[in-house]
Length: 372
Image (cartoon, rainbow, N blue to C red; front, side, top):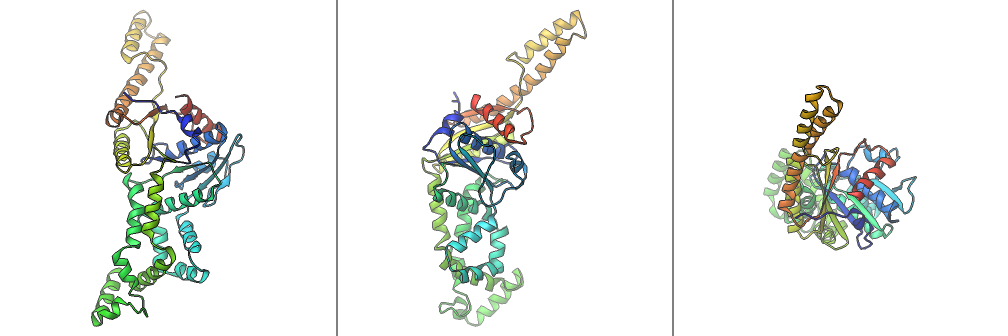
């Protein structure tokens, strides 16, 4: 039998410093993260920051801000505690990592490197890695009691856990280190030791991938080795921090087969990785007018229509019957998660009555979760 998730108890827990909201796209993850962050600040007096990876303007608008960027900015009109908000800029975060770990001269060399420009802007896994990097930066300041993370939207839930390690292995791996040894002038130059074959290798590599990419990669990697001290170690350290008791993962889903399947898969993965999975939020359930079943409503409507074919109450009962049928189907879909993950507490929320466009909307959504 499923247990209920106590949202307020989680938000008030002073032992929790990070809440990561995870799930597939289109399930209300960003709204959930923002509403929970606001509720933690106002109802529980916590100093809270919400970090979103979603580039859409919806969050900024709902918080009464023109735009969000890579710097935490205070949300006006919040009472009780405090709330800051920001949106990840992965390029700027990567730049910050470079600046904090090297000299201005070396940083300028890294920034000018075409391969760095590609990796920091478009390389697969960079967004997820930099989300973890920014999370670590926020934690290290000690400025906030609670960080609420709206995890990166991705086609596969595994990307959030796997991509940082993949990027770290690539940038800190054997092949990339061999390329680092290929920097012109290096005493350890792999290409110089290869002699004539190196020229052939370079020509083929550049012909396939274009321009002076091999040289760019080699020079970037030589700088990387001195600058970062090992991407893999940083990724592993962040991964371990996510496994700690101070972190909570919340899976967000809608009562649709694809979203529930993704939620089950992601929940199993979190459990396998010993991540603290504290609950699932099932959003956007069809609201019903009462607990009456569709069958009882249709029977009552038929009886009324025998007396008056246009009886107004009969129409209401038939409308409720349609809603009840839809809700029952959604409950069956949601029950699949409970059967597969019986130890994970749930909170099931009906469709919110209005579009969330301001703080009042976020408060209303948070109240809905708190009462559930």
